Length: 59
Image 1 (cartoon, rainbow, N blue to C red):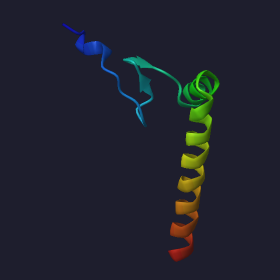
Image 2: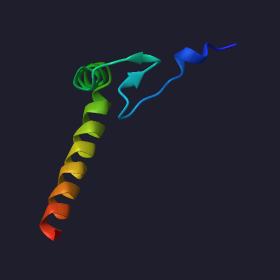
Image 3: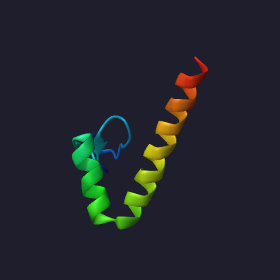
């Protein structure tokens, strides 16, 4: 039976594999470990920034 404390949770919580990982260091870790992730994160950050700019221009 799996330990309920070691549930894989990622995203805004900053938890990876059941342990707290600082957000920026977590991104750097994944980008270094898996170069494909750097492309994914770069696109994700770009889309978030573009959405924020669109939102501020309309309000």
